Amino acid sequence: MRATIRPELMVVSKARRAGLKFSIENSQSLQNSENIPIQLIS
Image (tube, one colour):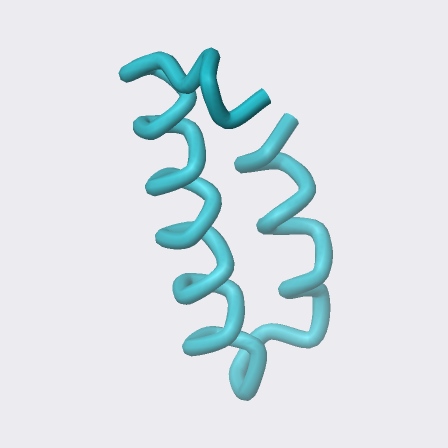
């Protein structure tokens, strides 16, 4: 798996990290923040 890392996968992983950061930062104000990372990942 590590041998077949592609640029698009790197972009997806960065987007996931950004989505997680976004949800964590807004989890204090949004009670439904659990739905945000799911939508971003899928």
